[in-house]
Length: 271
Image (cartoon, rainbow, N blue to C red):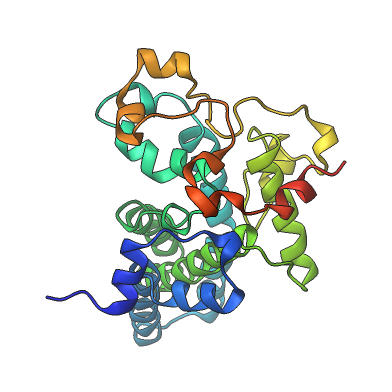
């Protein structure tokens, strides 16, 4: 089957978010296969939630529980798995770690590696939401929690794109979470693990409001996968065609593309 134009456009081109307009992003977002899958699963889940609907209070409780479980789950995965160092130390998991997080920190503006991989995200979100909803309200609750989890996933992914887009949001909420997330990418990666919700960062002591609150991290772009680590655990290095352990991710941009600017990175470092 031939690949449609929007899909081939996303698959074969490198998307630098600092060169895209908001309109470009909206188009790319809603033609991306993973987002289409989340929307489809969400709609189907909501249809079954309506079909099996019972006990409005418990259904509402499913929505509340999903709204709490999602940011907590993301925080734990982001901090203890994506930013851990055990995944790159095995040839069995090195490629997965490279795809799901290392590449994103090496080049934060590359849209191709900003989205979570569907094969990882869908089972993870479903594996959390379905049991939570089922415990609260049976199969109707499971469907409701799954549908709401898919809606939250789309919201999270779009906000994450906005955070790396060369665009200043007018909405105060978006502006603030963008500032905090860019600090995570350009100042110190050992904090501000939330994307749309920083409650758990505050509760677990990993929140910082200003760059001056923490020292500049030497591993902000490589997540600890330095040249020395690459010698001991070479699999990510080989898959990447070589990495510059502590240097700026702009090394991936060739020719004229390397002449772009990153105003948001400067803003992230304001004290």
